[in-house]
Image 1 (spheres, rainbow, N blue to C red):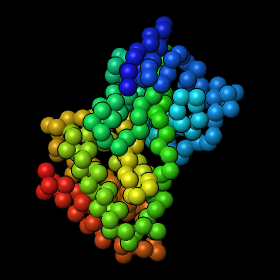
Image 2: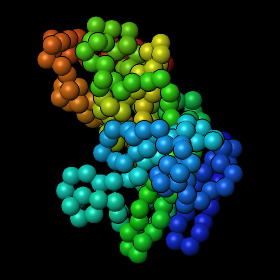
Image 3: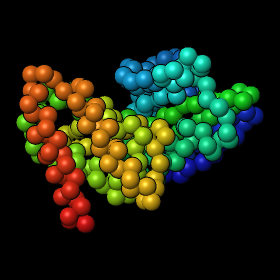
Image 4: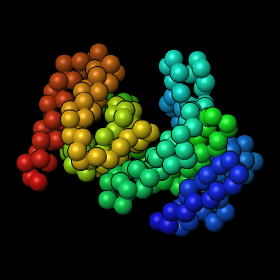
Length: 241
C-alpha cells in the first residue's frame, strides 16, 4: 500500500496510490459510478453506502451521515477541527494500521474531507470484502455453531490485544465468511490505544446488547450459550499469549 495525499482548495483526499492513479472528487460521487456502470448495489446501515465494481477493485463507498438528534441539526455536516482530525481521514489511518498488522479489516482505498466554512463533509472508500454475511443475519442458523462463536471471540481479542477500541461493536459490524473467517468493519471514531484497556469490556457489553436486541425468539435459549462460547474464545487467546 502506498498512501498519498492530494490537496485542492478546500478539500483533502488520502488514497492508496497502488490502486488509484488519479485521485479526485469523482471517486466519491455515486452518480459518476452510475455513469460508468459500476454501481452494483447499496449497503444497509445508518450512512449512505454504495457497492461498486470499480476498475481497480470491488469497493464500498460510504458518505458520513449523522444519526439520532445531531441529524436534526445537520445530516451530513460535522464541525471542522482540522483535516487530520476529520472522521474520514482518521478512519483511513486506523484501517491502514490495522491492515498492516494483518488484522481482518476492509483495506482503505481513499478518503475525502471537504471543508465548507466551519463544517466539513466526508467520504470513505474501502475494498469490498466478498462472500461474507453480517453476523446479524446468521443468528438463527448458526446459533448451534460453537466453533463460530469461539472464533468470533478470538478475533475480537486479537483486535483488543493490538489496542483497537471499536466505537460501535455490534452484530452488523461483524462479517462471517467462508470457513468461519471473521472480519470487523465500520471503524468510524475507533482508536488504537494500548493504554485504554478499560474500554475493552465496554466493547463486549455493547456487542452483547446488540445480540440481545436482535436474537430470534425461536432460538432465544441459545443466546447465553453462544455468548459463553464467544467469551471462551476471547479468553483462550489470552491464555495462549
